[in-house]
Length: 151
Image (cartoon, rainbow, N blue to C red):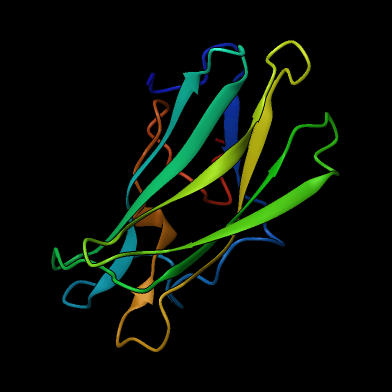
């Protein structure tokens, strides 16, 4: 598999109305434990029928390097230009803090792009907060799925 879609770009985004709740302070407070998206990538493979099948892969960790098990991630995806036709899928992190969400296979000529939106991320009642500012950063050095980071 390649690390990005073969023929159709897959973008990630998050809008202020759809993002999960962040820690009350926004910026991490020294000494407190936070959890965040340690790893995020999209793996795509072109099938024999020339459809592209992709998976969004997540790994959650805490600032004390603990895995976040049994967290539920909801990811929506859209392939229309106005991001209107959305479908959601869920995954639950395993004992290693990992989960993946399959995106339906598509023909690259029919679907020029797919947009991913993080709708919800919930680790249940924990003694620490989710802090999106600590999320893995994209090639523009911007944390994935944050208000200020379009992809």
